[in-house]
Every structure is written in C-alpha cells, then in structure tokens.
Image 1 (cartoon, one colour):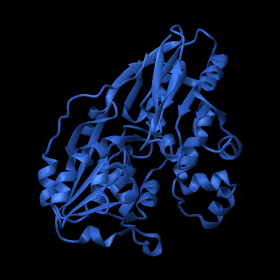
Image 2 (spheres, rainbow, N blue to C red):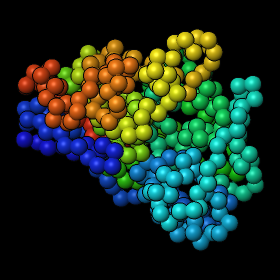
Image 3 (cartoon, helix red, strand yellow):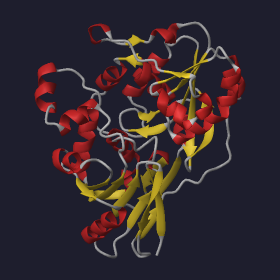
Image 4 (spheres, rainbow, N blue to C red):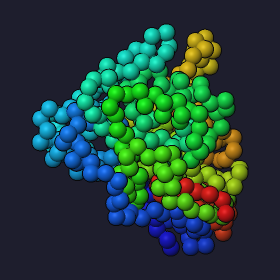
Length: 363
C-alpha cells in the first residue's frame, strides 16, 4: 500500500492509497544547485537586502547569506514581516527591519522612500506559479510588499480573471515595469525543487523561470490530491488558492480535488475575509474599488464550479464549511476515504505533493 507524505505547515501529513488507486505522483526531487551569480559576494557590497517571502528555498539562501550580512555592519535588511525572517534565520535576529508601503495618493501607485535611496539593493525571493501573473517572482513580490497600489494596477491590467499559470500576463508586465523603476535594484529569483533551492537566477526572463519548473505530463484522473507546499506556501487560504491552478490539468472537469493546506494564519486577503464575513458584496459595490485579493474570490468560485473541492486545513469550520461553502475533512485518512467513496474504489488518483514546484500538463 503506497504511502505518500505531503508538506502541511511545519510537518507532513500521510496519505495512504491502495496501489490500484494510485495514478501519477508528480514529485520533483532536490538537485544540485546551479546558481548564476555569487550572491554572498554581492551582499557584502550592497547597501540593502530585501527579503520578499519566507518560502523554504528563500530561507535556505538567506541562511547562506547570514555570514556576509553579519559582516557588513552598514548593510540594511528589510522584510514585510521581520519576525518570520528572524525566526527562520536566527543569525539575523535584530537586523531585520519592516518597511511598509506608503499610502498611495488618489488611489495611484506609490513607492516606499527607501527604494529610491542610493546604493545597490538586492531583492531575494522564490518564484511560484500564479494564476494572475503566470509566475510570481521576486519582482512581483517586491511590488506587493513595498509599492502601494501595485496589486490594484496589476489586477486592472487583466481583461479577464481566468487563471493562467505559467503564461506571461499583462498583470506580470505591470509589475515588471514597476520593479524596473526601483533605483539600483537587482532581483534574484530562486527556483525550488524538492523543497530546496535548485538555482538562484539574476533577474531571469519569464521563459527562463518557466523552464526551471519541472514539466510533467499526466493522464487526467477522476481525482487529484494537491499539497499547497507547506510552511511558507500554505500559511493562508489565499496562498493555497494561488498555488493549486498549475496542477489542475491532472484532473478531469467535475472531478475531485483534495487540497491540503494548513492555513495556520487564516484566510490571508481582505477580499476572502470580507467574503467569509458576508461583507464583500455590499462594500464592494459601494466603494467600486479594488480590494486586496479580489481575484481570489473568483478563483475560489471557479474552483468550486469546475470541480468538487475537499479542503484539509486548520481553518475554523465556521469559515471553511460555513461562509466559504467548502467541504472539509478533519484528517488525511477521512479526506482520502471521502475521495474514494466519490470516485469508486478502482479509480485513479493523481498526487502532487508540492504544487508550487509543479507544472502539470495533460497528456
């Protein structure tokens, strides 16, 4: 009986299937690093390092830089949530600062003042598939963190809301153009593989990043089990919803999707919180303005429209099962049992333990 371990927050959850049920397992194994740059040397000469996320591969690279950062007394380190960075890399404790974006004037875009200061700035983050941008790389995350109004500009650039992972979109181009306006900036995107950093790329073009994700062709099954990636990826429902779209060619329309995401920090976006508390329709109509994460409400609705979704998470039932109208399970055994009861005991189930590393295609 095959046993599969799927990242779930800080731990892994066990998924057990009968051999006759197991379809393709899309598993990207860790591989030797292939960096395009000597990042520690660059850090020693830089004026500031901006940590764009706390995904595992980002943390791995950051820990390798901690000695260089510690040795450079004048080097500034910024992160949107310093406590997370310092908890992941204790050598940096007391060195990481927060830098909130300024309030945009008349709803426009505004850059944090520190982005225009002299000196080379290094931005570090891990690339991930994304339904709005195609790929959310360091440039995208930097704008999310430190350029006020950037998400609204990116969302408005799309003429439709259909999720398109791994396709370069107008929203991505907006973020790319905004990131190019930051003074003396270099954007290093980490490509992950097996939960580790497979490569650190210096300002990679979109197509180069896309080729860095393992491409796997699978025969669509009646069900798919998707791991949202564990800590750094599945902290919120927002992150989990954005990660799942790169895998869905591995399941038939109207099929079963079991999404495993701990969501220890809750829903993760203003729009999802408004939806969960019944405020989205009235306030959204009244303000007629972009609400952070509004596209995720569409993704959630489309996911439920096209598939039968079962969520394995730590979200309170009052949100997950009530307001968001998701079917939930209290453990992986219960979740898999429900899945097999729906599709039949001999149907095939494809499994993607780490969705943010997967590029699944039907074949």
